[in-house]
Length: 192
Length: 227
Image (cartoon, rainbow over all chains, first blue to last red; front, side, top):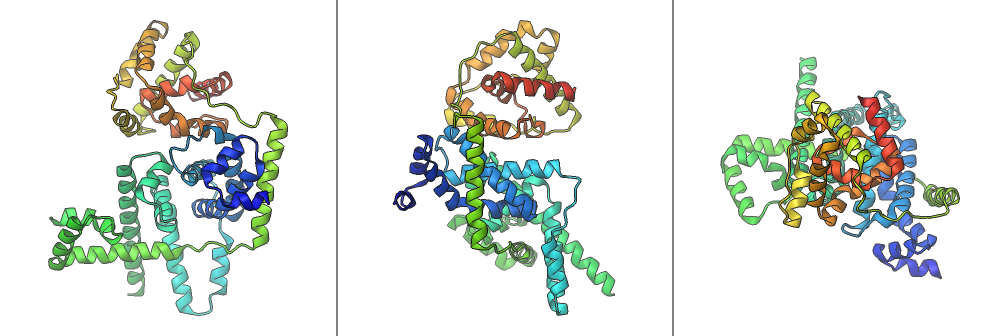
């Protein structure tokens, strides 16, 4: 019954309940945002196991820091900020370790037609290009393209100005375009 | 609108972020400029490639149920370790004694050193301080970090007044805004990550004001290692 009542509460109301010791209220917040947080982490670190650890850590840190959340932004913006920070720190710690995402390998192995393979190759190339972007450009692209955040929301998550977000996004797309141009012209040269 | 203006706004145009007037100006230009039209095509193509390039795994419902259970279990474990579920947000007016001045000096020295070496470019980026100051409509005095570093190098103790005067010029809200996220980050990592430092003096002071003794120790040892 209590769980049903919690479903109808806003994020801020749930936070108020958590701060007076209601654990179920936090569980409801986890249920609301676990998928979004996991997918954000997965898109940044590109590894399922790490994304699971980082997204679970996000909720633990959020719980521990909830009293510091002053409701100036929405709860999910604050939560994504923690996720992004944890992921960036994780990437920095593991900068030298190259992790191969098996999913990509399986997809290539399962590709039955050349067309699919070429599309897969193109996908891999775009992924590689995203991977090569500077950290903040990469995260900005992920937040904007995959999660549909506004520039303002991204600025709150990354703790920078809207202008910086716009500049990062602009340069990221330009870098990706240049990378793809170089890839296509390289392919054409090989064909000739 | 010239080609350069148009090209910087192509993404916003495609995403419908421009106001009506700008959108009309863009359309007028694009109708008569083949090159910019090609650029627009490339931008659209790139964005669509990015959008469709990365698939996320479909995970079964049992995974998500277990996810919640794991999170709640880890919270309970942490609570057992520390019976107090939350620490109160601290924003005390601390006594600005010798230890803090020494720490500030050390921190500014390291920031100055890193900035000089070009390892971080935060000195160029003062948007955070400026943004907050703008919001508060407070003219914050911003002595150059290098000047402070120099003064503190000469005699850390004698500059207590300088640092105190900077602290006095900061409102509580301003400090809160700057460190809200930084302190969470600090607690999360248990170590001080220099690469996330905003190298403005306002950041340094706000950070010091809000660190407890344990956090100061961590910071101090990190700084010593870096030097």
